[in-house]
Length: 260
Image (cartoon, rainbow, N blue to C red; front, top):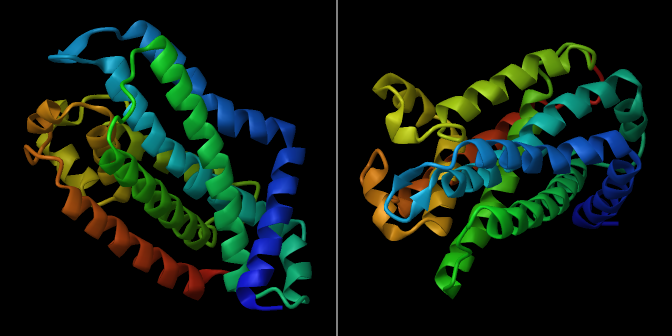
């Protein structure tokens, strides 16, 4: 069977394994919705004409969900699989690293689509989120999801070689994700952050993902509130592609079936 065919078979198995882990399913899919409900209920202030903080927060949580479902989940679960010997057994099969990466990408995308549907549904129902009304915005939303999922997946696989064991993976990965969420304007209005925080956040893809999602769900009049005073759609796409290439090369070089 081809590398891609094995990857899709692996993706189906990854989805089945994910659904069997009920605690992981609930935490991964429901946690962003719980945060949305808490923050949206507490912060109801208007941050710009026609834009409430809860609407702003939904856009950030959609982008952050890509990082949680892809980068964080994989950077923690892969070291755990390595510890129990799952990856060592896969090494003795026709499964190549690329097929394994494809399988991980499939489960991340499937989980993310379900999570996005929950966030958009609750956001529109409870917090007045305005869903896109034009095909162009839905097209932008689609390529942001595709690029964001792919980028998050390969970066999560690449970073999975950093933790020395599955037991300590969460302690290494989770603080990084939380810090990036604060820096990237998920929990706060990005333009209200100190300039040095904005400069640091601009290095990483989450900042650009959140900005891209805001361009989909917030009115064009809000673009002037961004650091660059525009949505910078072309720049967002370029930076995500650069990180996708970096993550792909890094994952191919650093991925290990067994911990050396």
